[in-house]
Image (cartoon, rainbow, N blue to C red; front, side, top):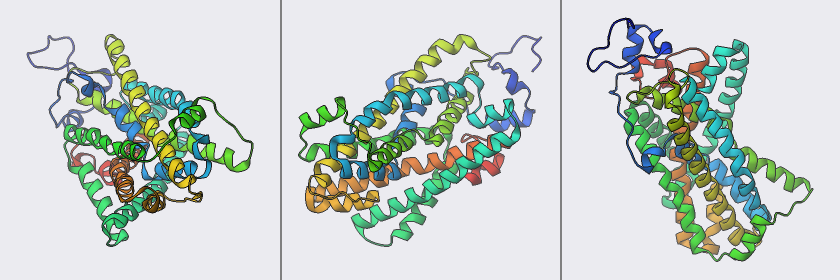
Length: 371
């Protein structure tokens, strides 16, 4: 756009990085109409809430179940300890996306050597693929426990459904679906409320940590921290902040519009710290539930989330079993698209391909197929 002439009615300002794009690229990016940001608390909760909730994926549930079953309430303090660490790194990731208008991989590519970003993205891609397989397998096993049938068929069904929804849904609608999908985590609030929990002992173990130098204890702490603070969450939240900036009416990267900074940084902080707090609270409830049931009854060897759900049936009853298993499916439906999406964002940005959930599939073919 010629910046020397006055803007006409209805014409939006174009940032420096957007002005460098060819006109076809700008049309492809903005095929969906921009919308002003809605007001209210729910509107403030977006990428941070979704990112935090997706951290409690079926693989994460398995880790928290193992910890609760093996160590009882003795590991509850780790969730309190990890909260500020998790929230801080996620806020940094979100700020990168909102300030630059690019995700983490795109920002690295612009400032460092190409080989570095490709190594980082390659490692992320391998980890995400392994995590995707584990999550889909856990979802299939959980649904098999509830309704019977073929777990392998359910794995394929979940994979196809998640891919179709992520590729063909309009961005605004898809973001809303992800936001409401976080309600699946309340399944673990329900389970902790129906089992007999000595809350005094739980509070003491949480705020007065005990520590052991035994190998299994240290490995468990590393596993919990590694599950809570995951690289795919960094890439996803940064890219979603950048995408939200592209789609919001009048929004620009903060590097181009620093006057928007105070409002946006406040929103990011609220969204992120709330989302990570919600995530850690749910993880805490999973540990407490399995500690109060499995550990108390001497069941300490749990390897999968579906196994934890099955072990709950004779101890805590059919209701707790069904709710726990259904929660695995619900959280998986939230986490699987985010695992795939974060990998697609990272690969696309690293190779300078058109990326974005708001693009038509044919406008970003490589990105869409990597979702």
